Structure formats: C-alpha cells, structure tokens
Length: 60
Image 1: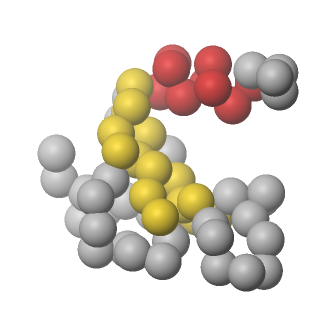
Image 2 (image 1 turned 135 degrees about the vertical axis):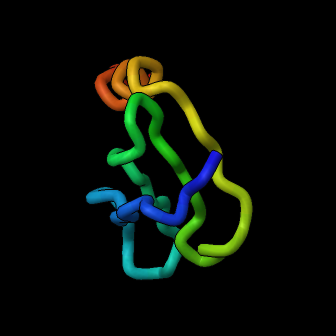
C-alpha cells in the first residue's frame, strides 16, 4: 500500500516522554498506525471499521 499521501497525527492520549502513536485516517477505507519515534519504520494498516471498533471500545 502506498502511504506517501498519508497525513499523520499524534494520538490525543500521547504523553511528553516520546511514547506516541500516530494515525493516518485519510487513506480511503483503511487507517495507518505507526510509532512516532520511527516514522520510516513499519506501519500497521487496518480497515476503517475495525479501527472505529477499537477506538470506541470501553477500557478493560
């Protein structure tokens, strides 16, 4: 999957110690997830429906 047009943003839950997750939601039906400390590293790509279920799931 081509990710050159991905617009990455940090999680609103990120803290100041650099342990951040970035997401790209402008990828047409899928969401990219990556470690902000390694922007050239691997990207997890999930379908948008599954991402939404993850985001709205109550904490365990």
